[in-house]
Length: 379
Image (cartoon, rainbow, N blue to C red; front, side, top):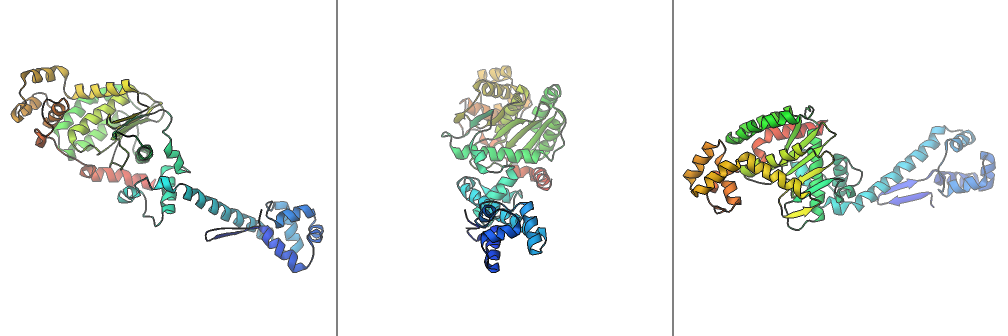
C-alpha cells in the first residue's frame, strides 16, 4: 500500500501522507506521535502507509492534538476517496472503449440526445448515463427473455449491442409520452381504422396512428434506424398494463412499414409480458420463438390483404399496373402494399411496378419524432 497514488494526470494523497510529513516536521518517532495522539503505534503506521482510512475518531484526536478543525482531516480523507474513485472510474471507462467504439455516437448527437464529446472516454461516460447503466458491458448480453429476429445473415456482438442501445433509446423517449392502461379489446377495434391509414399521405397518418395506438394503451415510438442494430421493430412490456411498440426506418418502403407495424401489433396482442421482442428480417436468428414470428407474419399478411381477396386476384393472373391499382382500390389499401406482396410471393419481379411503392424516412415525421426525443432529454 502507498499513501500516494497517481493515474494519468490525477494524483491522490492519503491523509497518511500529511501525517508522515507532520511527524517529520515535529522531529519525533511514530511511536511518540501515537502516544501523543492517544492511539497505537500500529494504527499510526498503517495510517502513514495508507493501509487504513482516517476514521472520525482518529480525525477528532488529530484535531485536538494539532489545534485544527476536525473537518480539515475528514476532508483530506474525502478528497482522497474522490480521487481514487476518479482513477477507478477512468480505468473502467478505458476498459469499455472497445464496446463504445461499436456504438454510433454521432446518431445521438445528430438527434440531440447527447452532446458532442471530445474523447472516447467522454463518449463512454455519456452513453452509460443516457442508457442508464453503469458499464457498457451490460449491452453484450441479450436481455432475459429477449426474442431476436435479426436482419443480418451473420449475427454478431455488434448487432446485440446496437439493438439494445436502440431499445433503451426508445424506452427513454417513451417515458415522455402520456400512457394509458393497455386495452386489447380496444386495440382490436382500432385495427380497421389503422389499416385505412395506408391510403393517407405519410405526414397525415403518423399523428393519427400514434393517437389510435395510445388510446388502446400502446406507447408508439418512431425513431431513426441505428447502424448495426439490424432490427426494425421492438415490443417490450412494462408490467401487464403498459407496452412499448417502437419502430424505425430501416425498411425504406411504406408497404414494409405497414407490414412491420401489423407484425408488431400482433406481438402486442400475443401479450408475452416477460419477453422483449426484437424484429428484423429472417436472415439471422437467435433465441427466436418461431411460432410467434410465423403467427405475426401471417397476421400482418392476412390483415392487410385478406386471403380470400388475394386468392381471387392471383387466380386471374393479371398483374399489370392497371390491375394492381384496380385491386387495391377494391380492397381499400395502398397499391404499394399489393406490389410488395406480389414481389414477396415472386409473382412479379422485384423491379416491377416499384414506382407504386412509396419510400419514407423518419425525417418525414421529424416534428413528431423530435418533439418526443427532446422531451426525453429534458425529463
